[in-house]
Length: 151
Image (cartoon, rainbow, N blue to C red):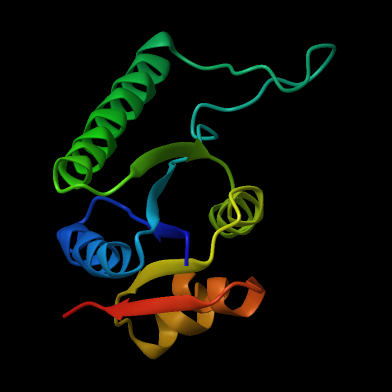
C-alpha cells in the first residue's frame, strides 16, 4: 500500500481520520494524500449570454470565498506539516468540484491504494434524501475504502 487518500472536511473528527491514516502509513511506509473539496462557488452565480460561465456577483462575496479558500489551504497545510514532522510523506489537495467525482478521479490519477473517509450517523430522512458521502464513495470506487465511524 503506497498511497492513501484521506477525505477531510475540517470538522471536529478530522484528527481521528488523520490518526488512522498515520497508523497505516507508518506500518506500510505509505504516502498520505489529504484531500478537501472546497465549497462550490455557485452561490455567487454564473453569467449567461455571450460570456456563459463567467463568475458574477458582488465583489464582497467573491472576497469572502477567497478568504475561505485561503483559510482552508492553511488548515490543510497544517495537517500535512504535522504528518511530515512525524516522518510521513504527505501532501494536501484542496480542490473545487463535485465531491464524489473529484475523489474518484483524483484517486485514479494518484494511484491510490486506499481511501479513508469518515461517517456521520444521520437519520432516515437525511439518508433517504441526501445520502452519505462515504456510502457514495463505496458505491462508485473500485479502490478499497476504509470508513471511520464518528461518535
